[in-house]
Length: 112
Length: 123
Image (cartoon, rainbow over the protein chains, first blue to last red):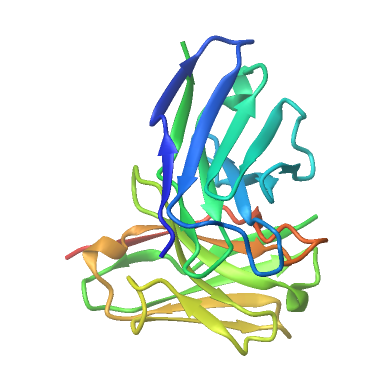
């Protein structure tokens, strides 16, 4: 199984300041089709998760451009350029390159 | 508008069974892989199971293999999860989610999620 490790566990940020979350996989996430199936999801308090980014850096429908993703192979990063109040929640990375699909443990973004 | 509505959760004793349903609308249900993901109270996300668009292929997490069965009825736009031999550690909110298509044009992510249904396994 591919283990997904996120850091930090918690990220207190000031409104308007950037935030960054790292995700590392135990194996390369490059699929045999050449794509890297690394996604980022956001879960606001009391809500189901929602897809933010897919294939490392592609924003899903309706996702603001202050969210961006980067990385390759086994190391990935989610960046929020300027944190807004609505960004509070837990962020998860997820790999869908192979079964079983696995999630990172989550990073809680909160306002200082 | 894509909608996924889970139902069937509730309180069940250890060793008991439950059947969850997920009613889908707003997209071509028969064209997509569907999945179940769960979240124990105060914990992170855990993938549970997935089923191909035709229902011909199924996949399970080791933690539920042999106890849970995923199925779908494309004529009813409904996804199911039959849960047998339930354990206390199966207590969680169970979400159904659409898995995006694999390949250049797809996300291969969990594109849309339902609101979830709570399963509590307790004596």
